Length: 234
Ligand code: NDP
Picture 1 (tube, rainbow, N blue to C red):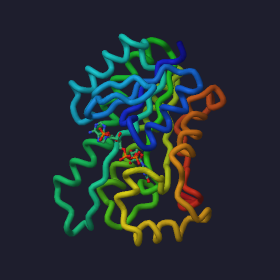
Picture 2: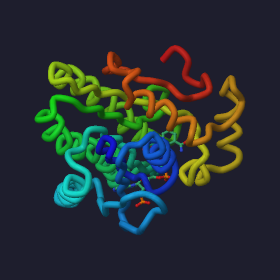
Picture 3: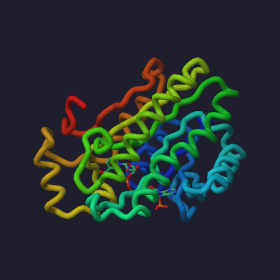
Picture 4: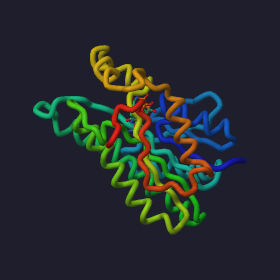
């Protein structure tokens, strides 16, 4: 049995690619989804990161199956795009509740076990948009920028206990989330990407696997862009 890994929102998209990559490397991986429906070849725990009791239940299930979580990937995320003048407060708080407060909920629950083990890896899936900004995504950008402060504070708090805390900041990745964008919007983004193409979810998974692995033992508090060069200099 490999390390105990939990990936929130790992039933599809980037989270699923990370899950498959880590499982192929020999880790014991559980993914969460809101439905809890089966995912081929992976353990699934039902979890809504907006709900502390749901997070607690998911961790209990994972701990009884595969032991305390050693690698946490806080990946669950949503968008609700609107220009600021039209952005309803509910759309702001919903996005922050899932993307940022949800990450806090799972990280807080995970460190309990990691502190006992005196080892652990926490990886937050942020976005280039958190650092670069994007018109129509003030809520999403704020939530993703918040992950950087969260991760770096945890890096400082938990480093002495052998726990690393890092962030990846993907650009446009080919998933359901990107499929929700208009062709016009995608073309505008890709026009500014030096590599000139959308990323495959597996290209994010490779970087996350590195951060979760032994070669990144001395990496903490880092924000690693995976954006084809879109945000250079941030
Ligand atoms: P998808 O929309 O394909 O997947 C989103 C995942 O988040 C799903 O597994 C979904 O679960 C889960 N999720 C959403 N809300 C909740 C919730 N309240 N509780 C638990 N799980 C939830 O998106 P991606 O794979 O593209 O995105 C994954 C992460 O990567 C997100 O944080 C996103 O912001 C980030 N990202 C994506 C980029 C892109 O271009 N695609 C670029 C940069 C960052 P369910 O199936 O149950 O809805």
